[in-house]
Amino acid sequence: REVPERLVIVTGPRQTGKTTLVGQVLDQMEMERPSRFLATDDPSPQRDPDWVAHADHEAIRSGAADTEWLVHEWNVARKQARGSERGFVLAIDEVQKIENWSEAVKGLWDADRRKGLGLHVVLLGSAPLLMQQGMSESLMGRYEEVRLAHWSLAEMSAAFGFDLQQFVYFGGYPGAASRIGDQQRWRSYVLDALVEPSIEKDILALQRIDKPALLRQLLELGAELSGQIVSYNKMLGQLHDAGNTTTLARYLQLLSAIGLLTGLPRHSPGVISRKASWPKLNVLNSALMAATSGYTFEQAQADRTFWGRLVESAVGAHLHNTGHPGLSLRYWRDSNREVDFVLEMGRRVVAIEVKSGARRPSTSGLRQFREKFAPLDTLVVGADGIPLQEFLSIPAGEWFEER
Image 1: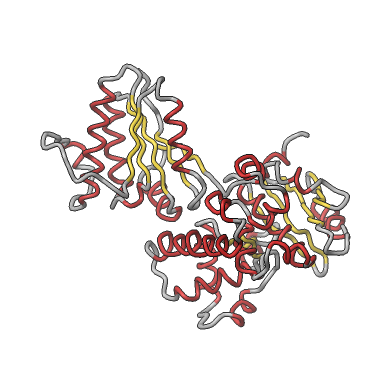
Image 2: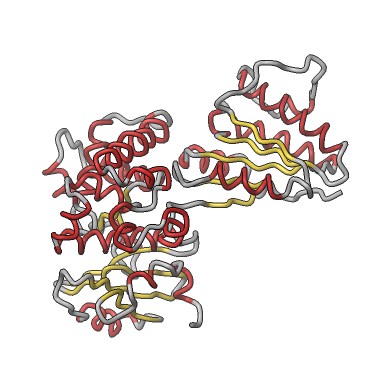
């Protein structure tokens, strides 16, 4: 019987298909290994009066009914694992809703390792901030993370028939795809059913936020200015009750952590100068920029300047979403020379310029960057360079491989 070395944790923003993916995988492997999928949204109040696991309880902070439910269900899965020559898979969705979930899982998991139990565990969570905190504080060295990002052009095309222009505008939210025929309905779904729950449940419910209205204003402003380099002081001037730049920087980091809006730092050899740089705002799903713009799909395409910024934002979101922990995404500007995106992996860099047709097709920024930093490669996306559709089909890390 196989004894797993790591538990699997599936993370990612809301509406990226975590539950669907795990459910499909478990269904496909049912003949190979039995499983059980549980949702913490509806834990059963019934408990087996015979279950007692004193050694496990010692590793768990007392007083949480949800934790008791977790221990009970884990023990049920243990019995099934012991009775199966092929082991057993326990999958728990929205595990972050269980109080002290990571401490509880640590105690249970370590006890199973000591006993050589063939219980495989998959945990899913849609609150990135809380999931990362639990993983780093309690489960270090015990898990393998599977990160899901917003859906790509290829995925939206295969599942819903999106073409390139539709993907640029409507973005990569699978739950919203069926609503694009009614654009007002689509816009309301994105903002009310996707964005607002992410802010409420993944930030406000988990973090101390003194100015929640400011957090929402920052997201709206960031969506409006996506693709632009903006100083924190300029942002302060456009927001009500803005507080200070430290508050804005923290809120921007939180919005990035839940997959909504990020602020890219400037590429610079010095860490201090990077931290002091103005951020380049970029939505992490182009649907956010489109939904808050007031433009219909047709109007957005007719405005070449707006469409150019939307294309650039879609490229930035793609690079961010298809990256990995060893890859950094930045921009570069020196005086009036600029490079839209800079990928960094170790000491190697790749510079990327997006040409949507809305701006004068100049590559002077790339030339100066090449002279100053000797990058591994410089890429032009669109115009006479790499076709946008092709570029959006290539994960960010592959630009560092031999092609």
